[in-house]
Image (tube, rainbow, N blue to C red; front, side, top):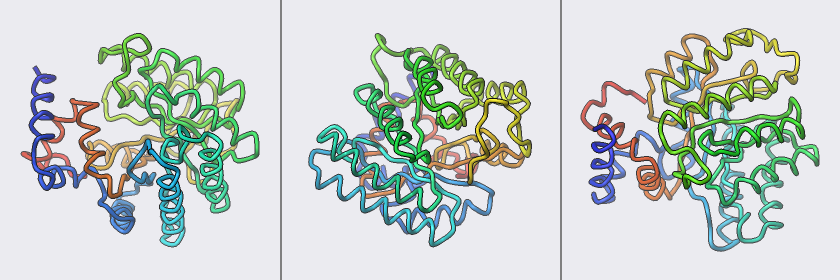
Length: 325
């Protein structure tokens, strides 16, 4: 029943005028400009949150577009440093040209990661659909090989291959492995991914267990209560938690601007009360801050690829006081 309602809300929303979609999405997108993202981060910093910034846009058709993203991320990096924000960067490799010209795309990503490293800033490579899973992971490995260890990847719990990817990255990187684990926004084919809610939750929880056992830094990106509760229990089983130095024997040294081996991450505007509760309990919480001129495309894509967001949109519209960003 809930699924049908969500899909109906999505179908109606994507047919609404652009201004309406913009009004609904304003709680989930900082705005079209970098200044908008900075203002949001300054406000939420007062709640103890830290951040990761994403310039909206992904797969491109020309390398000139890749130049735009490189420049915009460089601007974001400068603004983060100037305003002394507790923030790192999230980038989509395809936006840097990885699917057009792999060599040039790698040059662009390396330039950004190297500059971020000079500012003691971490860069997360977002995981896009299954076409680029292997190349995204390989990009992380290649960057670590040249000494740029301020970079990690995202893995999607729903993919069958994820546990094998964790094992391979552990072998290659050891305690330098740094993940964001999420269920995955892309609705992948059933031949390569779990498709039912419970199977996806179970697979994501298994990935969290494997990452923690490997000594890796684990960013738990979820709004699902079953995933968050499982993560808290798994952390406790490892003796990990708020204000406790990471006790795992196979963990690496404490990372600057990071939690004690883990953190929780949430999207801007989604389950703010839950995020604040986690922060109040002492957990490091990071908010994903998307901004950019592609806000409309981003909003529609997220709705189409994950119809369950429809009920959250409706709640934000009808009962805004129940879920303050």
